Length: 113
Length: 115
Image (cartoon, rainbow over all chains, first blue to last red; front, side, top):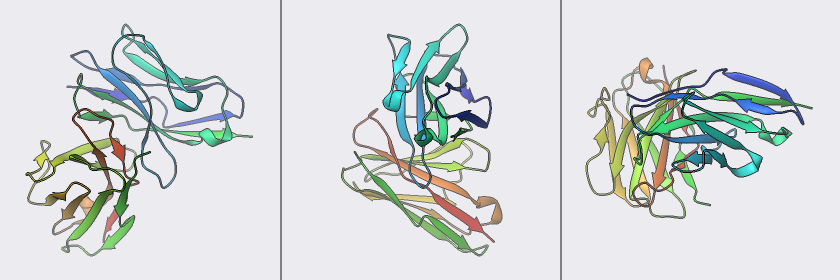
């Protein structure tokens, strides 16, 4: 069975600081990995996804994530936080190329001026 | 980009009543819609997958007679929580996609509180 663990339900950073949101997964088959962002009163939006190939994936809004098979991780980073990055972030995994997404519990990012 | 709406955004009902939640794809036709549930401090859990014109496929542990799903058109799916109880209080989220394995577009969610 697949699972996703997001370490830290809340992360706070100063504007301009590095953002690091952690995600570890468990999967018995090669995983497809996703990061979604949810702004208040809006639906989840896809930030980026890893399927196959290059392990460093670049997404929207300056975010990127690196798939590390040996560490079963897919951490999300952004070099410099912006106030507009404050939101809830969800990591998800699917069993290969399937529709079924398994989500983590989410990490709320706060950005202070 | 593609937009998915949900109505209502929140609802409070008495125990024993039924509640209907609508999920609409506003600017595209969704052959498949997904329903998720999220309890506080927990992850989104897939409840069921509905394809237009056919019966929904429910995930293990989800009561199909309690959570009725109707996907009558390519732009509308409804989730009816029948005989709701306080333990059904949760955040219900839908998503929709056009073709198999395509990107899912998520609605903003509906918060259900059962008194």
